[in-house]
Length: 369
Image 1 (cartoon, one colour):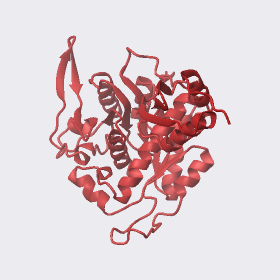
Image 2: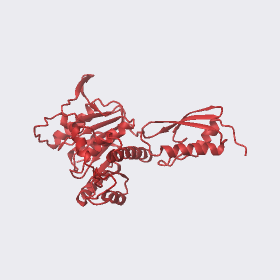
Image 3: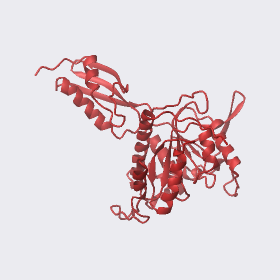
Image 4: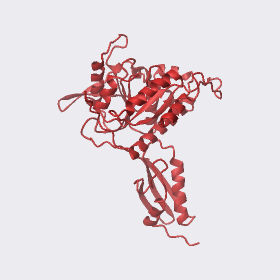
């Protein structure tokens, strides 16, 4: 059989047959192929991924090689380098948070489901995959990021820029962080009224130097209230993540969170559900799973509401020790929870890319009273 000689055009035509599995379009029209260079019998090009933690990278590389070899000599050597460029739909550059590509709200219907643990480990997991990540701890009832990141005594620096004082986020484990816990004495009880909490969140968003970020995660208080409305009125939220445990009472409250973001006046896409404490794994018996809070509750809710299940995070003794010591457990390579959180980071990055490809940009909500 006679095979065509590789040219820039022939390689491009071959790669036009490769479909990006999540987005359903070919790699050429998605502009995901860069710098095709042919040197004799060798073809080099860059595969530009839309997420820093693409779970389909090996499949896509394999599909590219097969498509080229089907049209050309089987003796061709194909070198594929990968890089990433996180997608964004934000068109309001120059307004609030101009350098932030995606703003993600992390919410729960009720307290005690481990929402802040999810937020902290997701942020670090994304950073470990070379994403630029920021985290706002807006949980007024229990700001826990200062403890989780070993930043108990941290205070954000102030920087004067064009006559304005801007807070400079504190950095830990590759994540830029601002927390309500930085503003209060941890030994004193502080009573926050709704407007005070909303004002603090607005300051974290509008009066802080976040710079260039792929993802800004916002850890919201449990429930549905003033601070949630303040967020969607201040910035265009890319999507929301709902955290629940498998118990019936938690699932019922998680539905309220889903309904809030999906409501007509707010209309923020739900990226998916995280089922936390999905099962218990004893450290001395890592092969055993005990469904102490029920089984697959979050999974069933995701199926019923037709939203993605982003992850099922197990409960292992080490999570409490890790959080209290100020080192998120995702850093503990090989630990069952670290593996689960790294998978969650990939899943969230994947869903953000899908959301940006398939839905319109979120607009800032204008609440009419």
